[in-house]
Length: 255
Ligand SMILES: [Zn+2]
Image 1 (tube, rainbow, N blue to C red):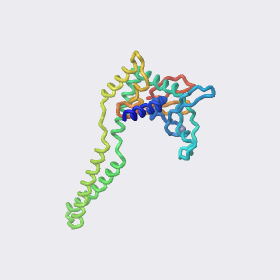
Image 2 (cartoon, rainbow, N blue to C red):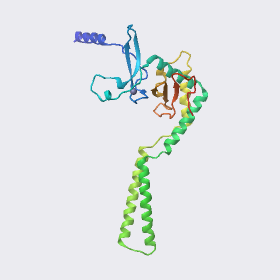
Image 3 (cartoon, rainbow, N blue to C red):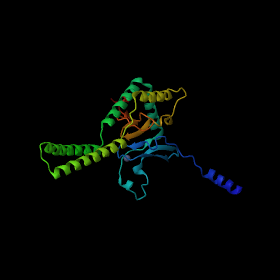
């Protein structure tokens, strides 16, 4: 048994290959076709290894898959250069108090819009309620004007029952879609904590901001970096836009 364990251990160690690390895996998307980009390494004709992020439409090309049908012209992106750009951009935002303030304000605006945005189903039920309330009012008016009939009495009962049912459905929807509001102070605290990490003397890596960076979209000549404003995903609407070439514009947070 001991031998078996030893040999298993050996073969396990032998089989263990250190796979290259791609810090943006799961966060990086191709801006041309929308598919995720995946880590990829290849050798040049000189034998040097290159590490890239590659649009996943190019994966499994030999296999018969749906992805084969997507033709995407996205070029491979050098892993180290891209990761450095995303890290440098993030650190420079966090080191800029104006940018941090702008993010905090944006968070509040996003949250306000979310709180005001009613689900479609709720709007439908609310319009149904309005309609039934109108019918009910007509029936009640008729009774008040001395019109007594079994039909009207039955209708009143039916409408009241329907209204109770609709209100209870709306309550359920509200409960399912409830947003727990986050205060501006909480957002600022979160950003301050991140800023402390960004200004660490001994440096920081992309992993340091793993919960802050939500999504990176690579387009031709531009990358959009989307940030979270809480550790639980809550995406900011405006990405930091970094031009890959042409412009020296360094405005990272758009208002
Ligand atoms: Zn693509």
